[in-house]
Amino acid sequence: MKFADRVNKVKPSFTLEMTSRAAELKHQGFDVVNFSAGQPDFNTPDNIINAAKKAMDDGLTKYTPGSGMIELRNAVCKKVKRENDLDISSEQVLVSNGEKQSLYLACQSLFQRGDEVIIFKPYWVSFPEFVTLSDATPVLIDTSSANNFEPDISQLEAVKNNNTKGVIINSPSNPTGAVWSQEKIIEILKIAEENDWIVISDECYERLVFDGQNIISQKLADDNNIKANIITCMSMSKTYAMTGWRIGYAFGRVEIIKAMSKIQGQATSCANSIGQAASIEALTGSQVEVENMINKFKKRRDYMVKALKNIPEVSCPTPGGAFYAFPNFGYYIEKSFKEKTISNSFDLCDLFLNEGHVATIPGDGFGAPGYVRFSYAIDEKTIDEGINRVRKIIDKIK
Image (cartoon, rainbow, N blue to C red):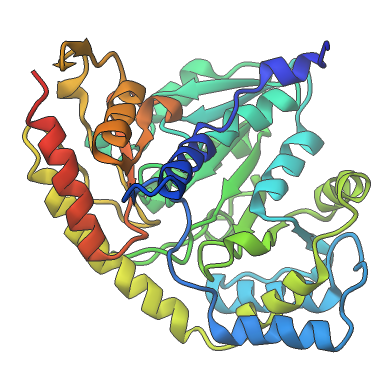
């Protein structure tokens, strides 16, 4: 059967593939340490679960407006005012089936054939695919761990041309956990304003910051009188341990939100009503459990980074946010294990999984050869066990 060309253009999600392989091994009875998970290991807080139960009991099981329940959009406005010091209206908000859909809709609404969109490496795996699926071309820019994975502005100047239509920002970052400096984001926003680029700001991990304050792109723009056209995408999944509920939202200029809503209306009608009702409680109810999660993630971060740095020839920058460490195992690429050459980080992660039953995510898939992503959304005892298994494998690499 012949499929449409877009199927062949897009790459499968290797992060989901690795998670599935780990789950299959666990199902077979193996003791798997899963560092591949891109989700909190905590359950959704009770107050949010109870709000969902009440919504079902109250009959909130029908379609909602395509852009989301007005009560939830108003709750987003209150959250954005309370936590991000921004004034937005409900007309500027679109609720979607997870932030991933918000990002996809933004690309579908704003980019087309002939357009170029700047993406910084290492990137979240779906960014280039979203751009490709909109028939535009992703333009990838290298960064370095020595500079906190922040881009050199001269690189943007070098690649920009009349076809450049947008740039995607992700801080705190998946996969690196890096939190970019305010100064760097402001520089990028100024270039976007000067060149009339769209800025898609993925703020998925904006609450999960451990060292200092995180200020989102739109607030930085407002405070510095930058008129860049920014679409901000946020998630219920990471902050509130709601990955399976599939609720996210975007806010920006009304005309862009309406365009995104138009496409969503034909694709999925609306986000699920029960998840929306639960999200109202998440945004407006007690935030105590969120703070508890953040404190636990910070403690785990420190524990994991220290353990990874104790592996010979491995360097690991301390991430400022999210729940990922991104160590560099480049020393071990092109070396061998049991007479088999390790050609890239895909081979290395296969080795960790097959020999040690430790699931990790290869950096090559994020545009970062030699790196490996470890999630610390897992308890310290399991972190210790998993890193020890990795260390034993590393000791056998020649």
